[in-house]
Image (cartoon, rainbow over all chains, first blue to last red; front, side):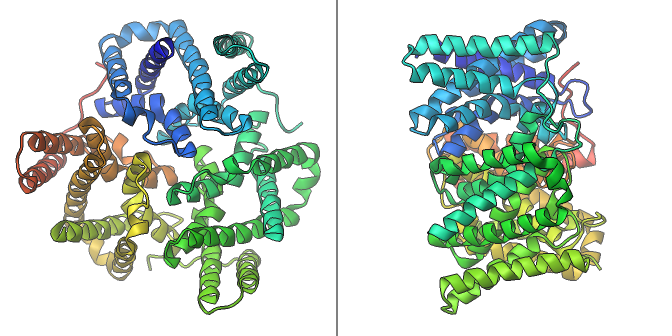
Length: 202
Length: 202
Length: 202
């Protein structure tokens, strides 16, 4: 519990920062928009997962620390966004670690509620990517998952690896780590080598 | 159960095809987009209905065959989209039968949960049309129900007919068939004779 | 109960009118669009609140009078929209009283379900503003809360005041009235003196 919980709080904090930064240079870049967008980005995915699974109370309603982590992320962005924006690589890494973590946490939570592994993998991907999708839909942008880079697909691959290892009897910590590394590796390679998901229509 | 279940699986399959085909000629027409859109189109409406009714587990979480039907629809689209696209009329008919079926199934499910008939009719319409709406909202298109043709209105008429016949004591199969035929007839006539819902503001 | 219930019905009626009027001068301004938009505007926020809290059955499924209030609002709009449109100030006041009322009702409902005050304040704001947001997202407009005026922020201020007064032991009616007046005052002043939420990025 200890390590994973710490990671979740850090993930929420990091997603709040990347959420707040997305309203930069928009005409609606005010305090309210920054807070609302940070909020949507960091807990939208987990909220959708919990609503689809019927898992109440929702994570952020049960544990107020998630709200405080978001507020800390907003505060950090406000105080040091000039510095943060220059850290493009760091931010990308934060986001990548965030989706890796959220994918596996989401998959595990769904499994724990007794759903089939296929559904658990979907829920893991939703946890990781749907916060960004909700944020994009709200501001009339093409959702991140429809843009070319390998994004949700990396999460899906990690979720599947986790489930396979879990089924094969690998220890939980090993499965967790292996799946996270796979997601991060695919995502980093995709950006570096401009991988794209293959076209559906030939 | 047998016939209706078979119809639901076929409806899900057909909606997945029409969903996957909508990403054709979009810049984001990759495998991921095709799968995600097929998924949203076919189960978005039923998911919204179940979430609004608090009916858990959701249909596609309880019955994995719905997921497999979607995957089959995606596979069929991939293998034969050149052929499918030429079948515009067939596809239109598939979609029309799909919304007719989903409207009545959704209305029945809501009734079975003890809600009032007015609410059941709304839930039937949501089941049929909200999958397409969610798909359109995600990709920044004007949702299908806001375009001119008679679409959701046909579903609503069918749901009302079903409820009236049910209330009048007609047998379930008769009510089902009559309502489905009404929806299909209105929709076909609307396209053929360019019917439009009357303007609200004179 | 008596007075609050009456107010809720009136609020729903008023939100339905402002919802139906938003499709004026749109190319999709038909009967269906007017009804659907009125429906979304008036109960979208409360629905989201109830789904997030896991509070079933949803308000409008439990109490059919809310649906009838919406239908009455649609009918009133149809019969007298020429007149209503000229009443811009009256409509603005209706909307303002509506969000004030919905904010406090939503906050109270969440509190009554045992959530923390921070969450209750969020739920109050959601109740008031998310109906309009869902409506805007559906029709591909920038959601109202991202536009410059002080809107959701006014609701948030009112929710916080309500919670502070409640915590301090002020009577419920006094807290209700004080919070509503604060929301209305901020909103009116914001429009009159062109207040804007301060920019997040300096």
